Length: 235
Image 1 (cartoon, one colour):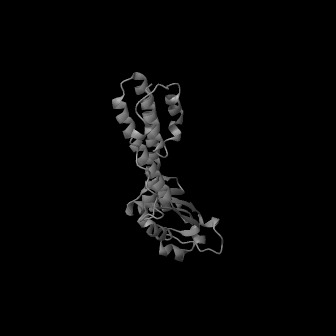
Image 2 (tube, rainbow, N blue to C red; image 1 turned 90 degrees about the horizontal axis):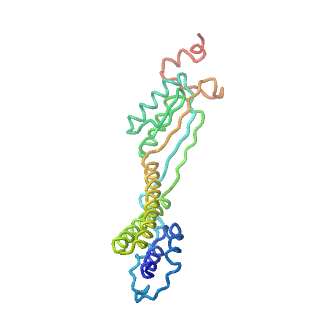
Protein backbone atom coordinates (compact mmCIF):
# COMPACT_ATOMS: atom_id res chain seq x y z
CA UNK A 1 0.00 0.00 0.00
CA UNK A 2 1.33 3.43 -0.91
CA UNK A 3 2.00 5.36 2.28
CA UNK A 4 0.96 8.65 0.67
CA UNK A 5 -2.44 7.17 -0.09
CA UNK A 6 -2.79 5.95 3.49
CA UNK A 7 -1.90 9.41 4.82
CA UNK A 8 -4.41 11.00 2.45
CA UNK A 9 -7.26 8.78 3.66
CA UNK A 10 -6.31 9.44 7.27
CA UNK A 11 -6.24 13.21 6.72
CA UNK A 12 -9.64 13.18 5.05
CA UNK A 13 -11.16 11.20 7.89
CA UNK A 14 -9.55 13.39 10.55
CA UNK A 15 -11.09 16.54 9.08
CA UNK A 16 -14.60 15.09 8.78
CA UNK A 17 -16.30 15.12 12.20
CA UNK A 18 -18.80 12.41 12.96
CA UNK A 19 -17.28 9.86 10.60
CA UNK A 20 -13.72 9.48 11.88
CA UNK A 21 -14.56 7.08 14.73
CA UNK A 22 -16.59 4.81 12.48
CA UNK A 23 -13.62 4.46 10.14
CA UNK A 24 -10.90 4.04 12.76
CA UNK A 25 -10.30 0.32 12.23
CA UNK A 26 -9.64 0.59 8.50
CA UNK A 27 -7.40 3.62 8.95
CA UNK A 28 -5.22 1.58 11.29
CA UNK A 29 -5.07 -1.19 8.68
CA UNK A 30 -3.99 1.29 6.04
CA UNK A 31 -1.27 2.59 8.33
CA UNK A 32 0.22 -0.73 9.46
CA UNK A 33 3.29 -2.21 7.79
CA UNK A 34 3.88 0.35 5.06
CA UNK A 35 6.91 2.49 5.86
CA UNK A 36 8.42 2.96 2.43
CA UNK A 37 9.88 6.46 1.87
CA UNK A 38 7.70 8.88 -0.09
CA UNK A 39 8.20 12.41 -1.39
CA UNK A 40 4.62 13.47 -0.66
CA UNK A 41 4.15 15.10 2.73
CA UNK A 42 1.06 15.56 4.86
CA UNK A 43 1.40 19.31 4.42
CA UNK A 44 0.70 18.99 0.71
CA UNK A 45 -2.76 17.48 1.29
CA UNK A 46 -5.89 19.59 0.90
CA UNK A 47 -8.14 18.66 3.86
CA UNK A 48 -11.81 19.53 4.12
CA UNK A 49 -12.57 22.89 5.72
CA UNK A 50 -13.35 22.87 9.44
CA UNK A 51 -16.97 22.69 10.49
CA UNK A 52 -18.58 26.11 10.92
CA UNK A 53 -19.69 26.87 14.50
CA UNK A 54 -23.20 25.77 15.42
CA UNK A 55 -25.76 28.53 15.78
CA UNK A 56 -27.11 29.05 19.28
CA UNK A 57 -30.55 29.72 17.83
CA UNK A 58 -32.15 28.75 14.57
CA UNK A 59 -35.18 30.50 13.11
CA UNK A 60 -37.74 29.10 12.91
CA UNK A 61 -37.48 26.79 15.88
CA UNK A 62 -38.27 23.13 15.24
CA UNK A 63 -40.78 21.87 17.79
CA UNK A 64 -42.48 18.47 18.06
CA UNK A 65 -46.03 18.67 19.41
CA UNK A 66 -47.73 15.61 20.91
CA UNK A 67 -50.91 15.15 22.91
CA UNK A 68 -52.57 12.26 24.72
CA UNK A 69 -56.25 12.61 25.64
CA UNK A 70 -58.90 10.55 27.38
CA UNK A 71 -62.38 11.61 26.32
CA UNK A 72 -65.71 10.39 27.72
CA UNK A 73 -68.47 10.02 25.17
CA UNK A 74 -71.78 8.19 24.76
CA UNK A 75 -70.66 6.46 21.54
CA UNK A 76 -66.97 5.58 21.21
CA UNK A 77 -67.28 4.26 17.63
CA UNK A 78 -68.96 7.44 16.45
CA UNK A 79 -66.35 9.53 18.28
CA UNK A 80 -63.52 7.63 16.56
CA UNK A 81 -65.12 8.22 13.16
CA UNK A 82 -65.66 11.88 13.95
CA UNK A 83 -62.03 12.29 15.03
CA UNK A 84 -60.80 10.65 11.85
CA UNK A 85 -62.91 13.06 9.81
CA UNK A 86 -61.45 15.92 11.84
CA UNK A 87 -57.91 14.88 10.92
CA UNK A 88 -58.84 14.73 7.23
CA UNK A 89 -60.46 18.18 7.38
CA UNK A 90 -57.29 19.69 8.85
CA UNK A 91 -55.07 18.21 6.16
CA UNK A 92 -53.84 15.37 8.37
CA UNK A 93 -54.47 11.65 8.46
CA UNK A 94 -55.30 8.69 10.66
CA UNK A 95 -52.22 6.73 11.75
CA UNK A 96 -54.02 3.86 13.48
CA UNK A 97 -57.32 3.22 15.24
CA UNK A 98 -59.44 0.68 17.12
CA UNK A 99 -63.09 0.65 18.20
CA UNK A 100 -62.42 3.05 21.08
CA UNK A 101 -59.08 4.73 20.30
CA UNK A 102 -57.37 6.56 17.48
CA UNK A 103 -54.01 8.18 16.69
CA UNK A 104 -54.09 11.08 14.26
CA UNK A 105 -51.42 13.28 12.67
CA UNK A 106 -52.30 16.88 11.86
CA UNK A 107 -50.17 19.75 10.51
CA UNK A 108 -48.37 21.43 13.39
CA UNK A 109 -50.01 24.77 12.61
CA UNK A 110 -53.41 23.12 13.10
CA UNK A 111 -52.57 21.59 16.47
CA UNK A 112 -54.54 24.13 18.54
CA UNK A 113 -57.56 23.83 16.24
CA UNK A 114 -57.50 20.06 16.63
CA UNK A 115 -57.40 20.33 20.41
CA UNK A 116 -60.34 22.75 20.41
CA UNK A 117 -62.38 20.51 18.10
CA UNK A 118 -61.73 17.44 20.25
CA UNK A 119 -63.24 19.25 23.22
CA UNK A 120 -66.54 19.17 21.32
CA UNK A 121 -66.39 15.42 20.69
CA UNK A 122 -66.97 14.59 24.34
CA UNK A 123 -65.85 15.41 27.86
CA UNK A 124 -62.08 15.55 28.26
CA UNK A 125 -61.26 13.46 31.32
CA UNK A 126 -57.48 13.76 31.07
CA UNK A 127 -54.97 15.29 28.70
CA UNK A 128 -51.19 15.59 28.43
CA UNK A 129 -49.60 17.97 25.94
CA UNK A 130 -45.87 18.24 25.22
CA UNK A 131 -43.81 20.54 23.03
CA UNK A 132 -40.23 19.32 22.50
CA UNK A 133 -37.74 21.70 20.91
CA UNK A 134 -35.43 19.71 18.60
CA UNK A 135 -33.83 22.65 16.82
CA UNK A 136 -30.29 21.98 18.06
CA UNK A 137 -30.63 18.23 17.54
CA UNK A 138 -31.80 18.79 13.97
CA UNK A 139 -28.95 21.25 13.24
CA UNK A 140 -26.39 18.82 14.67
CA UNK A 141 -27.67 15.91 12.58
CA UNK A 142 -27.78 18.08 9.45
CA UNK A 143 -24.15 19.11 9.98
CA UNK A 144 -23.08 15.49 10.49
CA UNK A 145 -24.85 14.55 7.27
CA UNK A 146 -23.16 17.37 5.37
CA UNK A 147 -19.73 16.25 6.61
CA UNK A 148 -20.44 12.61 5.78
CA UNK A 149 -21.42 13.53 2.22
CA UNK A 150 -18.28 15.64 1.83
CA UNK A 151 -16.18 12.73 3.07
CA UNK A 152 -17.89 10.38 0.62
CA UNK A 153 -17.09 12.72 -2.24
CA UNK A 154 -13.41 12.87 -1.24
CA UNK A 155 -13.17 9.08 -0.93
CA UNK A 156 -14.83 8.54 -4.32
CA UNK A 157 -12.34 10.94 -5.92
CA UNK A 158 -9.53 9.04 -4.22
CA UNK A 159 -10.90 5.73 -5.51
CA UNK A 160 -10.85 7.05 -9.08
CA UNK A 161 -7.10 7.69 -8.74
CA UNK A 162 -6.25 4.36 -7.13
CA UNK A 163 -4.09 2.15 -9.37
CA UNK A 164 -3.41 -0.70 -6.95
CA UNK A 165 -6.09 -3.29 -6.20
CA UNK A 166 -5.23 -3.29 -2.49
CA UNK A 167 -5.65 0.47 -2.35
CA UNK A 168 -8.99 0.35 -4.16
CA UNK A 169 -10.40 -2.33 -1.84
CA UNK A 170 -9.37 -0.38 1.25
CA UNK A 171 -11.04 2.79 -0.03
CA UNK A 172 -14.18 0.88 -1.02
CA UNK A 173 -14.49 -0.36 2.57
CA UNK A 174 -14.33 3.22 3.77
CA UNK A 175 -16.92 4.27 1.21
CA UNK A 176 -19.30 1.50 2.31
CA UNK A 177 -19.08 2.62 5.93
CA UNK A 178 -19.66 6.26 5.07
CA UNK A 179 -22.66 5.37 2.90
CA UNK A 180 -24.17 3.44 5.82
CA UNK A 181 -23.66 6.46 8.07
CA UNK A 182 -25.29 8.74 5.50
CA UNK A 183 -28.34 6.48 5.28
CA UNK A 184 -28.64 6.45 9.09
CA UNK A 185 -28.42 10.23 9.35
CA UNK A 186 -30.90 10.73 6.51
CA UNK A 187 -33.36 8.43 8.28
CA UNK A 188 -33.02 10.36 11.55
CA UNK A 189 -33.46 13.72 9.83
CA UNK A 190 -36.52 12.52 7.90
CA UNK A 191 -38.06 11.22 11.13
CA UNK A 192 -37.46 14.53 12.92
CA UNK A 193 -38.83 16.50 9.98
CA UNK A 194 -41.99 14.39 9.91
CA UNK A 195 -42.57 14.82 13.64
CA UNK A 196 -42.05 18.58 13.38
CA UNK A 197 -44.36 18.95 10.38
CA UNK A 198 -47.19 16.80 11.78
CA UNK A 199 -48.28 16.84 15.42
CA UNK A 200 -49.36 13.52 16.91
CA UNK A 201 -52.56 13.17 18.95
CA UNK A 202 -53.51 9.93 20.71
CA UNK A 203 -57.13 9.77 21.87
CA UNK A 204 -58.81 7.10 24.00
CA UNK A 205 -62.59 7.19 24.34
CA UNK A 206 -64.35 5.91 27.46
CA UNK A 207 -67.98 5.65 28.49
CA UNK A 208 -69.63 8.14 30.80
CA UNK A 209 -69.56 5.62 33.64
CA UNK A 210 -65.77 5.83 33.76
CA UNK A 211 -65.54 9.52 34.59
CA UNK A 212 -65.84 11.19 38.02
CA UNK A 213 -69.40 12.11 39.03
CA UNK A 214 -68.31 15.74 39.38
CA UNK A 215 -67.60 15.95 35.64
CA UNK A 216 -70.48 16.51 33.26
CA UNK A 217 -70.50 14.26 30.21
CA UNK A 218 -70.73 16.17 26.94
CA UNK A 219 -73.15 14.41 24.59
CA UNK A 220 -72.67 14.69 20.81
CA UNK A 221 -76.05 16.37 20.13
CA UNK A 222 -77.84 19.08 22.15
CA UNK A 223 -81.16 17.24 22.22
CA UNK A 224 -79.53 14.25 23.92
CA UNK A 225 -78.72 16.52 26.84
CA UNK A 226 -82.44 17.06 27.39
CA UNK A 227 -83.13 13.33 27.47
CA UNK A 228 -80.51 12.80 30.16
CA UNK A 229 -77.64 10.30 30.28
CA UNK A 230 -79.44 8.06 32.77
CA UNK A 231 -82.35 7.49 30.35
CA UNK A 232 -79.98 6.84 27.45
CA UNK A 233 -78.23 4.07 29.38
CA UNK A 234 -81.48 2.17 30.02
CA UNK A 235 -82.36 -0.53 27.50
